[in-house]
Length: 107
Image (tube, rainbow, N blue to C red):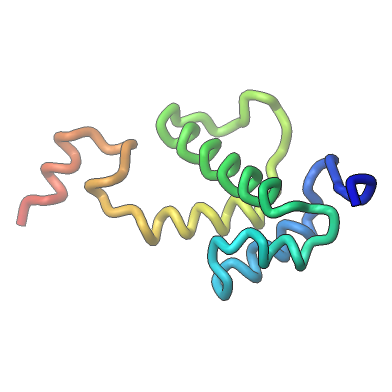
């Protein structure tokens, strides 16, 4: 089984599977791993969290280009970004200053 594990870059097809199955099964990494041969649940979880961390870091630093120069899969990044926008309220957005958050809270 160890010979069958993939250690190369994620394909668009693998990321498409993650995007399509996440709304239905959520963060059940073991269930996702059953759908993507060669990727363990831990590898899937690490990939998911790495994309989220990069997006949060860019938002804080307002960087448009990744520091490593590697392009990201846009479908997966875009999907995680929409989840972040849905679940983040203005009060939780680290990109907003305290003054901006206060202004949003005013009637």
